[in-house]
Image 1 (cartoon, helix red, strand yellow):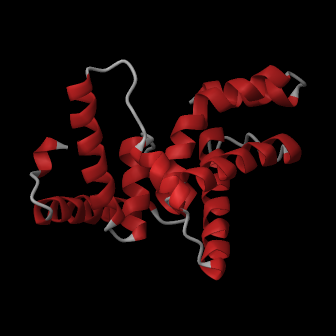
Image 2: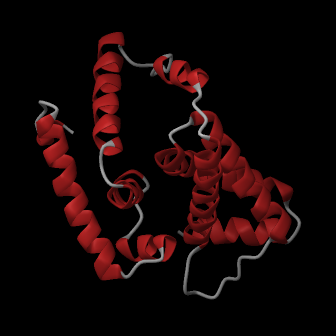
Image 3: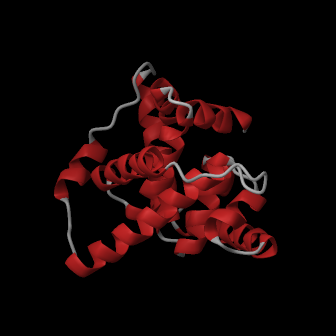
Length: 189
């Protein structure tokens, strides 16, 4: 997406508003991606902020044509997420606050019944994804929730393109199996 690199260039040129527009453009997808790693809403928001702070402070991305700005941004977020997981593993923290925040989520603007059905499907899908191997979950989130190509996923995850295709295939099969084991049909998702 050329919008990201154009905004980044504006930002490097001194337009502080361009950074805000980058956050608006990529923030929600990045937050979802980070949450897929850390499973903690507050921590995911912190990592999202740290990602954009790094972009602001270091301004290291070089437009070489090999990788997009979005790929670079997701790579930074992935590395920060993995570092946070290492720290958390050492501390072994459990946050009850985040569990209650998730259960209070509400889909604004929808019929209550539709919102309840959508929330139920999202929770089932989240539970099924959580049961998958991390590498399956990672590529599935990047591909189907963030819309990244297998080539970009390969760059972000530091894997070969063929390996990404294999992980996507195996991940979809594992997700289907997990949903069936939970009593759901794959086609409903």
